[in-house]
Structures are given as C-alpha cells and as structure tokens.
Amino acid sequence: MNKKNMKRIISRTQSLCPVCLKKINAIIWIKNNETYMEKSCQEHGRFKSLLWRGSVPINKWVRNKIPATIKNPNTSVDKGCPYDCGLCADHRQNTCTALIEITQRCNLSCSFCFADAHGKVVDDLSLATIQAMYQSIMETSGNCNIQLSGGEPTLRDDLPAVIKLGHDIGFSFIQINTNGIRLGEDEAFVKQLKEAGLNSVFLQFDGTNDGIFEKLRGKPLLATKIKALENCQKYQIGVVLVPTLVADVNDDDLGNIIDFAVSWIPTVKGVHMQPASYFGRIPNLPVEEKRLTLGDVMDKIEKQNRKKIKTSNFTPPGCENARCSFHGNYIYQQNGELIPLNNSSGCCGTEKAEEGARKTKAHVSRKWSVNQMPMEINPAVEKIEEKSKDAWDEILDRINHYSFSLSAMAFQDVWNLDLDRVKDCCIHVATPKGELIPFCMYNLTNQDGQSLYRNQ
Image 1 (spheres, rainbow, N blue to C red):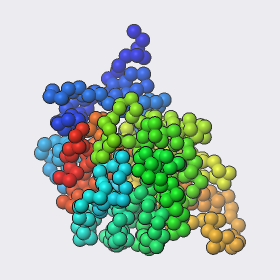
Image 2: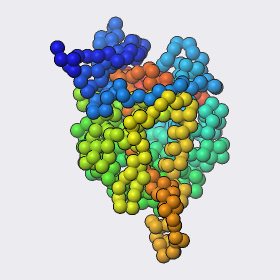
Image 3: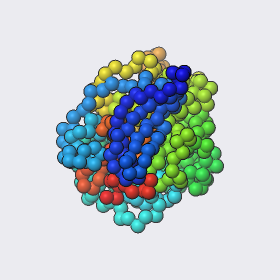
Image 4: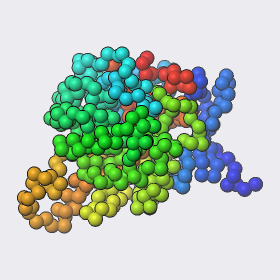
C-alpha cells in the first residue's frame, strides 16, 4: 500500500461530544495533505472533523512555548478543563485581548453570528458594571488590549464614555468590533469616539461586492463600509478589515479584499480573516469537506494575489496555540509593493508564552492604531514643504505609517474542539462575574445551540 494514502496519527487530545458536551478522547491524524480530528462518544457515536488542509504541512506549523502561569486565577480547578473556565490555574496563557460585550442589541441579523444577536430584549451592561469588569480585568491580567463588542457596540450612545472609562482605569489600547453601519452614517459619532480615545476599529468586511454582503449580512453594505472608512480616515482612527470566510460565498474574493485594503493604507492597518466557525447562530451544521482551514486560507491568498504574497510570508503565533492562527507583517512601499518582514522558515524557536503575549499586545497596540497621519495624505498640509529626509528617516517613516498585516484566526467549534488549544487561548471574554473565559469556550454551542458559558 502507498504510505501517502495511509492514515498517520500525529497526536492525541481531548474534545467534547457535539451532542451532550461530555469530555471525550480524540485522535488527530493525517492523510495526504488533510488533517482530521476523530472522536467517539459512547452514547452519540463517532465524529470526524477537518482541522487542516493545504500545501503547508500541519506538523511543521509549530511554535514551541514554555507555558505561562496564571498568577491570579479567578476559578478553582474542580471538574477539569473546559468546565472551570474563568481563568483557572490549569490555563497556560495570559490574556492578550479581553473582550467585553457591552450590548446584545444589533442592527443586523447575520447568517453567522457568534453572539446570536439581533433585537434581543436584554438590558445593556450599566457603566458601573463595565467599570467593575474593567477593574477585574486589570487585577487579573494587567494592561491587556480591550475589544468592545456585542451585539453591535455602536448602538450604545454612551460608547464614548465606555471608551474613556477604560482609558481612565489604565488600558492603553481600546478597539471596537463593529459592522460599521453607524460609523458610516453618523460622522459626529465617529468624532466623539476619536475624542474619547478610540484606538482601532475591527470592521466587519466580508467582500468587495454587495452580493457577498447580501448572503452573509442580509443587505447590501459596501457603500456604507466605504463611508465608514472615509470617516475613520478623516478622524485618524486605524481600521482592520475582518472578513468571515465561507466556502463558495467569499473564499474566492480574498485577493480583492487584500487589494482593497492596500488601497486604503495607512488608514487600514491590515486584514484579519476568520474562517467560519459553527457556533452561535449558523445557517447549517458544518459540511467538513467545505470547511476552510488556515492552510486553505494561506494557499488561497498566494494564488489569488498571483504569488505577490507567499505562504512563506506567514508565521505561527507567539501568543496562542500555533494551530489557532497565522500572521504576516509587511511594509507598503511607494511603488505599491508589500515587502514582507518575516519568513516562516526557521523563525520559531522555543519562547516563553508570557513573552509571546507581551509581544502580541505591543504589536497590536502599535500597529493597529493611528497616532498621526503622514503629511503626504493630509490635504490640509499638502502645500507645506517638508524638510529633507535622509534614507534612514524614510525607512522609519514607512515603518511608522505604512505597516500592514495579514492574519487569520481559526476559532474552534464543538466539532473540532481541541482542549490543548483551549488551554493556550489568549483571547478571553470578560463576564460581569469577573471571569475571563477563552473565546471559543464562551461562544461554543452543541448541535442544538446549547452553551456551556454564554447566557449562563
């Protein structure tokens, strides 16, 4: 038998049953260029889920880390992972980004939604509750990055006050996760956000034509997104475009999305892709052959950008588990080229997880914000003669104003959940109880929509 056609087990882990959420053993195996998780529940049978596919081998996509210690755990270890999230002492990574859902209201009804949000009659968190959550995060995780989410956070008229409150408590980087509708329709509100200290916008941006938005978000939104970008440019707020990638909907538009993002540099600081995960509100249960994996996304980027961007530009993360994400950093040159700053070959030795979290927090805070636009794109100062710069000044100017990132995060759902990855998570959802729960566990639902943590 041809060895290439044989299954080869590469690791053993634990997962959950997609029906009853009971912890069960799982194996991860490779056949050809595809990697699967297989697991079995005594009551509900066997399940198989695609984890990785593509030209980049999963067994070479590693980054060795020395686990971190949670110095101030909020929950004790009782039932074991993943039933003691909060964080517990068994967790292996500190908080890089803490996410606060400040409202469950939304002005869209998307086919994919982590929070299953739309017009729910749920009271918004009070400013006093948000203040307590900020303080709890600071006590547990220090000055990590904050993402304000929902629902749709811009539906709160007091969002500027929420942002200012976070900065007053000591958080240096605060980002909103938004569909951009209000940012496009209410310029005065964008100005208020800037004055409150908003550092970055995580802008839902699924494609470059309205057909994609109609399928995923229920209405044409491209013109509104562009107006949101114009307002963010005017008030110097950095933007990261965030497409949810769904096979046969927008996975063939990656090259166009990246080209569009590059045309908006330096307002747009990068593209952060999220292959669709199956939790919260979903249109259907996953068809494993159509799952998009990180390997798929890297290959599609290279192909659709005519190899101007290569898979070798991408590296595993230093913060979360290597199988959770990839990133590539670039400098945008005056001739329109993206010059890669990292190369995956031989990039990653052993590193302390705490150091990986520190570097990631610093990188996001520095590269996804806009402190001051370069003079050449500001119409008000076009006629001012700049002092001559030497070559080093030019290099520093490009680094400071024209950095660009491409990244992707593959969130786990109940079918492909690997508890080893959960323990390495650095993106934590804050709760009013003062808990910090790994993002995938907070949003995870079984095949019937039952959750372990959300709304509990």
